[in-house]
Length: 178
Image (tube, rainbow, N blue to C red):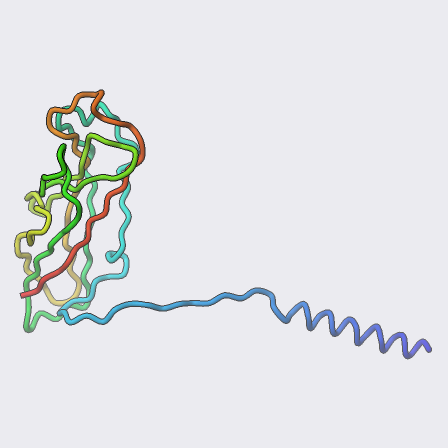
């Protein structure tokens, strides 16, 4: 009888250990991407970027005032410039400004009002939405395309015209090689 109880206890404990190890956690990894016809690959960290202006004081935006500059880059990798060695970037998005018709300002959405986002290229030239930037020369290997943005109050705004709150804005970019 004792032998049977010992055997039964052993079998039960082995079964519990086996069940405990059966699923100690699981998950999955999904890989995605896109194959493109281009002389350079876009670095993964440059494809979908989120940049934060933080908390900008409303008084800084009065009558066209500006926030601090926020730099951002589009990193290219593995560039083979044997056939195409120049690139232009076109940014698109909703027009900003007081009446939403300024193609040099990107509109913001959300609770905040009275400002838009201005962008400039690496040469400090204003970016015009829907228009290619100045041509940039590429080198073999890695390249970094530098840009900056700042939050700008609309011209003529007073402190009472600026509505405090959160905002977002999205611009898409397209590369054109030649």
